[in-house]
Length: 395
Image (cartoon, rainbow, N blue to C red; front, top):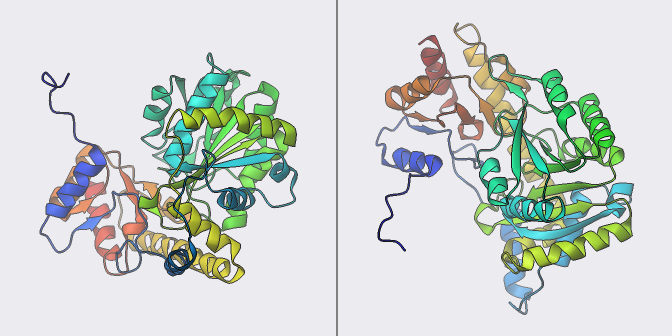
């Protein structure tokens, strides 16, 4: 089985991480790996997470299996985090725990393919690099739709809506709930409403990838687009992650939320989802979910977590503004759009050669597509990074 296998191609992100680790230059800056870093450039553990973990050490009585749906307290907490408790959408929603947001997306793909085997999934161009692989593996045909203009830093909304006229009732539309990865550009309220109206007219199902809730403008603001969609369509699916907003990357803490026309239909849909999970990974890991459930269920811890989340979000906003200020007037590309975008990621509009020049000459690591994780910026390196961006843009 293995004797004739050739060396597999290296993962581009992991390969870049290895190059960064091996670079001895003290000026090096990592803008590639998609994790939040604090003002010192460190990947942190939140204080509220440490407190919740200590509580678990002291009180958790068993490591026994729970169920394919995962931690029920966590599921209720995540459902209320996505849809305001008492809202119509909250009542029509059911949530199950998954191994990270990626696990939620893969289970969603398998579930969609089982229910709509002839359906396609429409993915934005650009989108997260793993989306095509996930849905191809689930057996779903992929259609791309225009989303973002790298040259101008703007949403291609008219072109997007024109392309989505091809949606049918068998199809699924993937949208990023907030902090679009990799562009950082999100629809406004009127545009969300227009997307919802189109979906309702076509009968297509929205699948919302919600990996960065709270990293854009705030928890309430970041879930506003999803609430608008839920008010327009009878059914939707939300794949969410706690990797960023709780900094629980390695704990693989995610969720899949189904919204149906009625609570009874939501219960039935969840019942049909559970065998898909059982045949995949059987049941999700509990530790991260137990941590999140405790934080969200304790008023004091929740308030402190929201403060920590605000600190992460505002730090990213601050370094975005400082980067734009440092680039202003340097000539070359206009980067002012970076200050208006949301979340960690941005597309720099640099060619592959320019990205290579960043690495070779400046020891700054971004992906070959020109995507940069701006959470890698700090007060100590942002001026240097701005100088490098300006220099390679002229080239």
